[in-house]
Image (cartoon, rainbow, N blue to C red; front, side, top):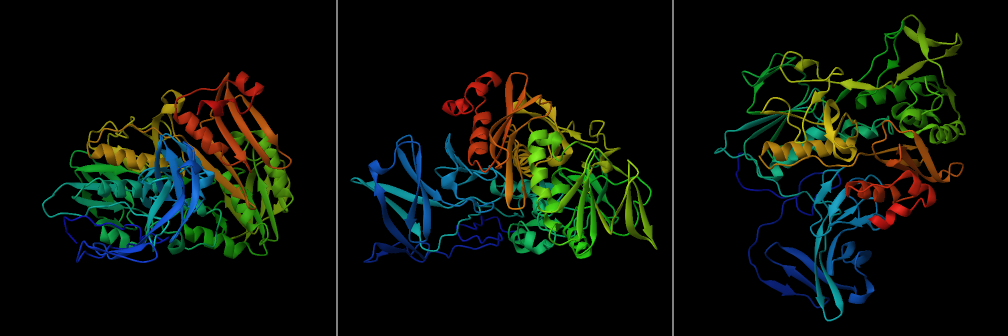
Length: 569
């Protein structure tokens, strides 16, 4: 390591994020092939030139999937110019042709990731990788795309490594989306100093949203990057390192294992921790939280053929119930609200999703709560509810929200709110000049909500925070401007959501809740502030673009014409 040269995963990045390196050039000459292919000796890669369409086949502002030798590419015509990028989102492989072309980028229809329409660079997450870029030229009335014959649908942006000539040290505490994105962005933007990521997790960073959707997944199968990736780019990932205090005078962090690390700049991205039960019996065997792959593996191993009680009727609880529905003997969700998702999606959508779950043998006990857990010989056997009834319970999964993992900052002088969230500005800087914070632990100004100070625990937003923090650490003044975007999936059905609906007072449904094919618009006063959908792609991604453009649509306008805002895109 220690090289000051750049390394580029190029277009050979695998689905797991492992690293491929380009072969060095021996000659810059190209040898033509009779089938329209050529060999680029500079890169020693075979390329093919493909006539994909006529100029007039694509109108301005349109996209088209075209066949190339390596598979497919997404051809784009914008402002009279042609470009071509990879046709699949680098996050989960969604077809970008079904996404949204707007303002120089393509937004994924599934989870909102954005890719530059000229370069393929990722500009908005979720996801870490960019997509390939293809050379395009026009000859006469033919549009010709040049492609690498071994193109992958993912591309790692060029990243630098540590140099012995750079002595600055950046320490990132955390190992989730914000921490990983921050680390990669620092290397992408040319930081050559020492870069350390210290996480209390026992694994390299992994895809946490999948935990509740695939309880049997291992840390290796969920890894955002393989361990060798971090080694190649001189990102020193220290696992099983839980921070216990920060000394802002000495620029030092102390960890539970007794080790201390110093820093020039500190980025705190420790995420949330699940709330624990405080009722009698909470310490019985098989009363479970879900935070790590090991937690998920334990739950599914002990739930098969057993009675499962889930406390909490929001995203984690319902996703776990959906996963266990055909594995456990019974699955019962106990919730305080009238229907699941009531606070986040509203009563109507919550009721429709409850019906979907009930059809799959998930039972709901709502407007209730668990007051005690009872067991035999230390093992859980039943749950006592607020209304006095008792239900069988061999496994209890607790999904009642999260709190910021920030106790170690208590005496640091870093300003936090009464919830323990770190208060940051639009650049993700705290009240300490050399300390930044990102992800679930922060309270930050949300641009689409008139800079209201909010805390948002979305995977997508954590990526945005991590990138913004990195750029500002490197004195590239950047304000976070990202539209909150989240999703949930149960029984093969997905709900997508964009915007910020806290304080909503009405929900306008366009479509059929019974058929689970609808768009829901959330209003606050006469302003439409968010949208959710099922089976209506790419409407939520379109609405995210609408919110990003700083435009408003009024409730009264929407009631007259639910699609009126699309004409403003």
